[in-house]
Amino acid sequence: MAYEKAHDLLDLAIWMQSGRDGVSLNDIQQRFNVSRRTAERMRDMILERFSQAELAPNGENNTKRWYIPQGTLKDFIQYSSEELAVLEISKKLLLKQNMLSQAQVLDGTINKIKASIKPDVLRLIGTDAEAMAESSIFVCRPGPKLKIDANILKTIQDAIVSLKRIKIDYFYEHNQKTNFAILDPYGFLFGERNQYLVAHHSDGYYGDEVHLFMLNNIKKVEILSDPLKVVPGFNLQSYASQSFGVYQEEPFEVEWLFDKEAANEAAKYIFHPSQTVKHNTDGTLTVKFKAGGTREMDWHLYTWGDHVKVIKPADWNKRK
Image (cartoon, rainbow, N blue to C red; front, side, top):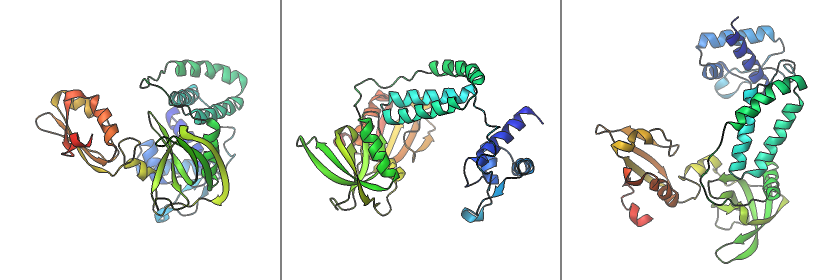
């Protein structure tokens, strides 16, 4: 068997052990970019070599999925210098984005992985991983970074995981006062300038409306015994997608026209998950999507100078 195919089979086996949801034939096709028949052969080879493999409970549309019980492959799993480097690079990126709590958790995970590697192997791959990580430098937008209390962030995360409400002492900038609020915390939005808690006032303040709370304005947080309640139909990903950036406002139709000089460069970007892109016959590029976030759009458009024109909304200059 060719080395590449053996490597793919080991990757598949590890993947099948990573969770009890299992892996379907469609999953194999997509991940390894193979035909249906090849996916079937790969599955059969795994089932032949690992008799512990089991058929998971039927999932959506009764799709068959297979998994390997935890611990079966413990002697086969090894880490590469590339994998360690990616983890180190990810930690650097989190630190650059001032996501200190997440960087601390990832650092602990890296240390656990290193502790599980034999010393002679770690010396061999660790040097390469360090070199790879040091070769990746993240240049972030200049400007001050807001300080976020790591303990406050960790407490909120614990509340979200345990599905509990929280009580916060929050500094309101409009009146320069600190007041408490009882919240149902749903998650976080991390922007380039600010970082927010997405939450709902559990006392019914503003009805079912969800609000953003700047993490650096949360002075104290306490986990309550009351269970968290989710606003019906709320989805954090859908909520975030309503905006061009982080700031939330009513979504509106957006259409940008990039001139011929900037069209090729603009085509490389995903400005919004819902966007559609059209290459026009005159060499220009039209980008359309629906989102809120007027101020953040304006900041971004400024970087394109005169090479972009706002077609929609027609009253763009009045909105700014």
